[in-house]
Length: 483
Image 1 (cartoon, rainbow, N blue to C red):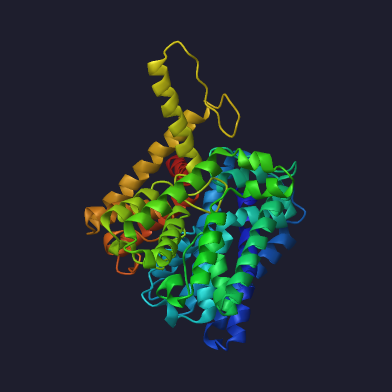
Image 2 (image 1 turned 135 degrees about the vertical axis):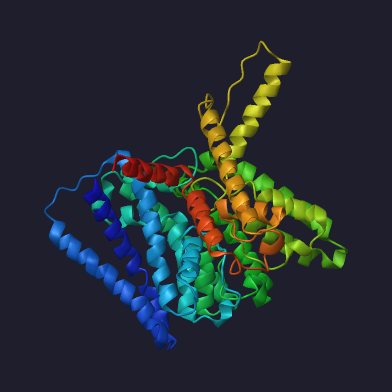
């Protein structure tokens, strides 16, 4: 088992090392020679170790114990975050290794909570790497590895199940590698489309690519201190709004559209709930914030952007929602509990879970009123899905327990209760901004180092849907007790 884990880990790190070619190329293009070694050294190290390991182990049988898939995925994600922190730390723009790891974890988990007060002081290449970590972590590094590395096809479905989100996980094709390739092709196509649109709307090529990475990864890192709002371009804001919502939709639905199964998409319970939720939230925020008909257009744009940003757990900003009227702030606050769709790049509890619990609540009320009738739970037009209820309910309970534990950690570190609670919701839900001292115009740099490490755990647990990291910790504790 140890050898199989090491094999997958080294190849995945080699793949992440390859992704450093992009910021390295930008550093050379922009003349940022001081940070070239920060990308070159980790990249060559990752390649060297991967090649050496392949040469030494190519004759060994390619086996994988699927029973250890969750622990393997958790361990690999921790290693990826540490590896991704190396270019940030070596660049010299992060004062401590803790800050570099926090930024890396926030990037790969698509949280977007930054420790930096001035991101515009960073070289273009470092900013691009920050945003690229969102893109890599969005659909999943392991899903990319399964698509590109044939040996990971052994046990690949279990690995992807441990990495992807949602209560119902299924293959799109008979081969899991083809499923991973299909998802990444859709992801790449949407990213390229957004980058092109942003570039045509007036952004530089690097800014367009960086924000496309962050948007499709629903991360929130930006190359500007004031986020997307700093560009002052309404077209850019609408493009980002549209793609934030597209990224929060289950990617399997795009595959079904491409394969001519539009009817299945239109019957999807989660998509219908997500569309209704976003529409209502935007309409409510616009109605509350609009002060005159002349300001309607700007108010609608600001409301649509902020609602889409929080609902998709992206965390971009064009307006400070803490300055909004209280009722509009409540609408934003409630979105912290929801999240995007399962199988998307968004974080949070996921819309499908609340949909299932809502339908079960409706059935329970009907049973009280009509005790002799039989009611069933239907999801996506399929009846008899009652088995999802205990699974979903137990996840929500564990999710909220982690939020409460993270709230307690924040309070111990000196945060006020509301800031600690919304910060916990943001970390576990991979949102990025919160309320109070951690609002959309603030950053996480001033937090104590122990709290930053706890927040890293919360971000990773939220991205891997809690159980994966808990299983890994359980196995580590078991090994220690056995020793």
